[in-house]
Image (tube, rainbow, N blue to C red; front, side, top):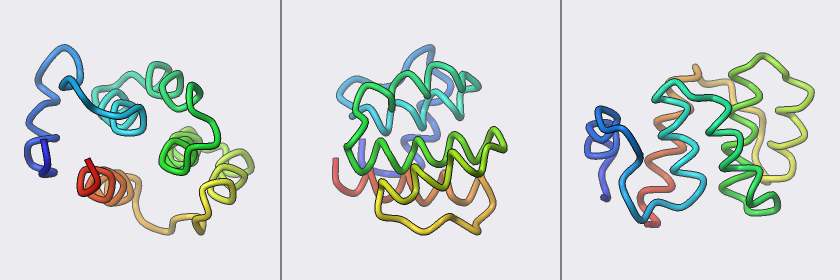
Length: 99
């Protein structure tokens, strides 16, 4: 899977496509409506820049900006000013390009 459209289309399935890294799995689960499962994915790889970046996005989504800010710093990213859907698309597109 290499395109954002393919990734979005996969959301109709019961589980993420095989072969996705944990950060992309987390993005899949959060868009699928399972924040807790997404959070579990990124917690498995703390210290991985992609997981830390998605971790920041998840805490931003829940409204915990203090926690989100720490994860953005760990990921080497600025706190996003994009809408949550636009940030999700940016994250997924960036990470899919490296799959």
